[in-house]
Image (tube, rainbow, N blue to C red):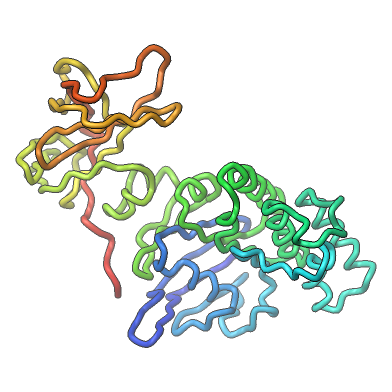
Length: 355
């Protein structure tokens, strides 16, 4: 079993609470991504799991066994660093073999396992090269092979793709995900990149101020965010501040009356840009239909974004598919924004500040 459990995990540096009471259950074979802005506590959490940072409080359990006080080399966890941390004077095979040699395995077994690890990451023909002779993507694969070769119970990935260019990052993240699934490895990954997290994770853990704000699948967090922070961090969102005047009726600070999804009690209305639509005339029967003026148009290849001013205080972004022959209204055009009531979700202002 490689189930990983964090129970009330905390880390204090003097009066500063870097991590405050993180509780998380990662199932065997699951890939969980810790996602949040810089300073939210995600990397500190990962390093407590790895054993490089001693918790102030809480437990780390692996397969039901308490490993909180064990040193890193006794936890059987593979870690891929943001900087790869390869030994520059050792060739690829020697870098990958390092962890096995520390375990004093026989030469024949070391060579066989190194060859297998390099095959998994598609570097079998580069065993004799030095790190400086490799591209960034190849160095990242060497670091991954070094983590895999020890046959870890848990794989830990600390911003593993941040040093790669955008195109290579897209390719490598798919490769890592496919390899993780094929091996059935329990994996925890840290990133601040929303797209990367959405593509790779089985579940997401959104953190802020050292605390877990929400845990769930991509769809759960995108469609049912627990707060304005989560809604803004997972995908693009329009926010309208005001109050819920009655069930299903939200009134903005500027006085706009907006029909919304029932059941919410917060003070912020969240509207995803792709749920809004534009028309050149009022739309009969629409739950919400507001006149406005296009102030800016952004061309994003397959997507067009229109920034529409609806009041002096409020401007909403509308995303639509870029269709040939239909460029949409230009800057300065008078338009009507319309959307169904269920597209408007009222959420809490924030998910909590520093503890």
